[in-house]
Length: 212
Image (cartoon, helix red, strand yellow):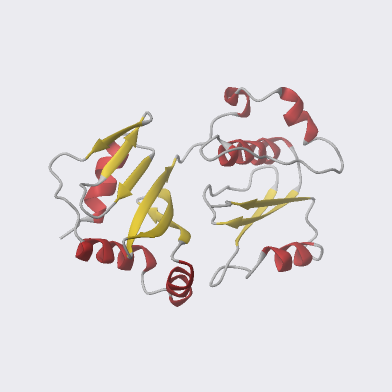
């Protein structure tokens, strides 16, 4: 029987960035870009993958409907104060999992190597900033570092629409409201979220969606 909690404990202890659960393989961690099978763990079976599905979906009807309709589900999960981005997809007609472990502390903006002009753009009274790039290029980290910079230095109301929410921000100088988009979330779609933001007296609107 697959012990998800044990797998997550091992991954966190080894400072892994991702965990892969795939039929016929041991749980695999990505550590400093290298893939490493978890020693002492058994090869995963189809039954255990469906147990993992039940573990992460937890009877949520909306999430179950999304996966069955699309053979793909992006969601978030919290384990021992560590947030996970959970991607469930399908291979050989059974679920497989990619678990991204979200660091509980954000790097300082200046540590990211992003030109300071990007930070200064956030000081403008209006405008549009696009954060784009390929998968695993640091888009989410950069965007949340910018939000954190605003939160620590400006007195604003920041509203985020995210699918799913990864970093959870605490209000500092700013007021931050984070909404998860999708069936069963805080708001069903981005269009309605943007429309309603006009009534929420926000100074800054952040839209984050993974296109996968």
